[in-house]
Amino acid sequence: MKEKDELLRQKLELSGQGGGKARIEKHHKGGKLTAHERLNILLDPDSFEEIGALVTHRTKDFGMEKQVYYGDGVVTGYGRINDRLVYVFAQDFTVFGGSLSETHAEKICKVMDLAMKTGAPLIGLNDSGGARIQEGVRSLGGYADIFYRNVLASGVIPQISAIMGPCAGGAVYSPAMTDFTVMVEGTSYMFVTGPNVVKTVTNEEVTFEELGGAHTHATKSGVTHLTADDDVDCLKKIRNLVGYMPQNCEETTPRIQYEIKEEFRDQLASVIPDSAQKPYDMKEIIKGVADDNSFMEIHPEYADNIIVGFARLAGRSIGIVGNQPLSLAGVLDVASSKKGARFVRFCDCFNIPLLVLVDVPGFLPGTDQEWNAIITNGAKLLYAFSEATVPRVTLITRKAYGGAYDVMNSKHIGADMNFAWPSAEIAVMGAKGASEIIFKKEINEAADPIAKLKEKEDEYAEKFANPYSAAERGFIDEVIFPRETRRKLIKAFSMLQNKVAHLPKKKHGNIPL
Image (cartoon, rainbow, N blue to C red; front, side, top):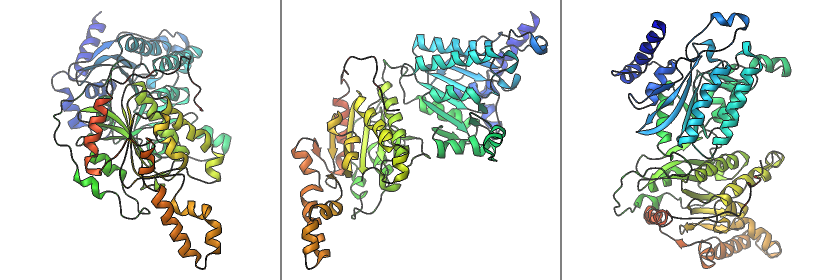
């Protein structure tokens, strides 16, 4: 009994009572924190309540009966972030390398079940060497129990994973099924098979960092949505991320108090270059329409020809999807389509309205794209937008060509309000390419083919390379001046806040995976 009383005293001390958070942040120099220290930074002061602190493993084999630690390598419980309830688990690498046992998994499953019952986000801090091999199939069964709950919770409550150490083998599939993953640079890695197995099977020599480090997954695979400099930075990013989400699928994100002003933004008038061939930064438009310093980009280092992220508009949380002309002219390709589709589906799951900023010349051509299924992957983004029932507003800033115009939240696939700037060009393709096809005979027979091409190009542009033809058909609701964009968007989202939409009755759709 005295041993258990001492354990509880130590737990209270580790929880950060008496200014513990400030102490931890002050002395943290980029290294790894303990499980309790991590929870102390993640959660509001004095809000953490631990569940299962006295749990121990049940294994008697391989001398394990002599190695018993209370908690069994994972700290679980609940607390608050900005005074909103969240459930958490933090694996403790100091106990059996954070390896997952039967009881370790049961503790995680218990908080997952509670999160589902009460409708609150689940946050997992992963730092584990994998399955506890002394337990054999029982530890594997524990992973499967967690995976199953990840799937049941998907779309019901937000699920966030932080990778703050090793996460390998079957363990990677739980974070992969959560909504967002954050990795710590230098101290975390994720892979299904490690460097030694890779070398044995494929004869490739690769380091842990190259194979599954934070930078690798942020830039090459897209497995991680955000990277952090250290543990403290990781936990602060999660706190910020949670602020854009509701508690569950039946609620909306709490609105921050905001007083409507004139809301005109003159700086937007100078963002689009005079030449249609010159790029510009779509983030400048996001900055001009969103509340000050409210934009949080997701997947910033992966498929940067499309931008996704959260922002606030007059205090309301919104999701933003926008083509980025600075990268590949903003075309849609395999990676950007998957990135956009995943984000759209998350926003739709949790009642977060969508703003789509369009400047897209089409889909990226080439054998690499076709052989890597641009057809199927492009359809994912189309499917995600078409399926979404949240308020959806589109702004076309410049190019909207071909099938990509349809895919990027056009009126035809269910967008609620579609705006365009006068600089918008909505057509099957660019004026030059269209003229070369339509007027091929006239151009070839002309005395000066170059001059004739320019003449026909101007003729086509006058007729189609503008937003007015689309507006005449009702495909664009209003052509607006750039400076009034923020004001129009605030009014549109306010008008749509009580939107109700019902999809046809079915078990579920079959998205082209």
